[in-house]
Image (tube, one colour):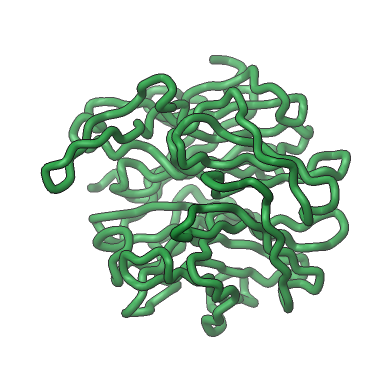
Length: 354
């Protein structure tokens, strides 16, 4: 597919929106992108790709948009465990300039065996050190970005897939990643993949994916992530798919999510081995803005809606990542029908001009 060439250009349907389809490594499956801006202005995008999620040939890859360039590079492979499936990467640049890559690794199609591994680059991601096991608590998964708190602590959201339920935790390091301590999020069964930002007042605000495909849930911490309020249902829809949150330079919050919920009967019928079940829709993909620290989300606009191509592949547009760069622009990447990763860049005003 020639459109997956990494070239950033104006959208044919909306000139105010810049977009690109990142180059493809494996034609079957591309998923779970995460973006990072480096100190030199380069953008990195990491995701997993292979013959199918959970298969042992699923690995982590990375593409780079060099500062000043308009072409995302051909992805390079960053993991190669032949016996495990590598998924859900998170890239992070530490205050000392080193770039960390975290991702999950599990036995094929067995989430209960998942562990978290990491490797570090000292040259902005061009070469990497050895793979090390960071968290070996079986069933642990990642999805969302690590944040550095005002007190200097590193906070990495995580969650567990256990037989008795899925729930959220945070991993906190006070020594720049040398050691970590785990803190559970109370009453977070079915609330996973928490995305966290630090509000201007110092409190932490988190949003959660809901396994019940009802609504996005939210929680607060007033002690740097060690304890959290019980997650509560928001007005925002959730379809049991990943969401992500970022804080803009003006203090506004930006959230990317699927505006779809089983509470509105937004589903399609799928079959497996002769049995039919309802699967929540992963469309549209929506960008929302809050100007009051997440209390309300009055401004929103769809980034991606279903079209004729969706008719051919109803997997949808999912697992978005969002960040703001030093120039104030909003950058988004997401799984485009699982065929590849689509990248979008907009200004905040784009949301208000819908």
